[in-house]
Length: 140
Image: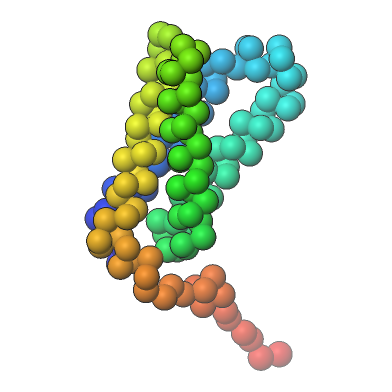
């Protein structure tokens, strides 16, 4: 059973990922103008999909590797936001608010993944994907 800290971290990360998608939609016309619809859509889909996979592998499967990658991406997002603030390049208005809230949600999620109950969750062995599959064989 997943501890509450892992479940809550998943919720924060999913909220942050939803805001990542919202921020992409807010700048969609600029993305399409700069890169074209195909590349803009592909990069957005890849980024959101990668985050979703890492979140699910981390919080549902207990993968320490996925947790590590998720933490690295969270750290890069936080550093990027701090750099933007420090250099005065942070977006203003609603986009800026969405970006800040998105980073805050993911940082909170990252902190929750290192609470004692979460560390115990990641320390225990987890089943392999193959063990979860239902195998039915019929005799011919």
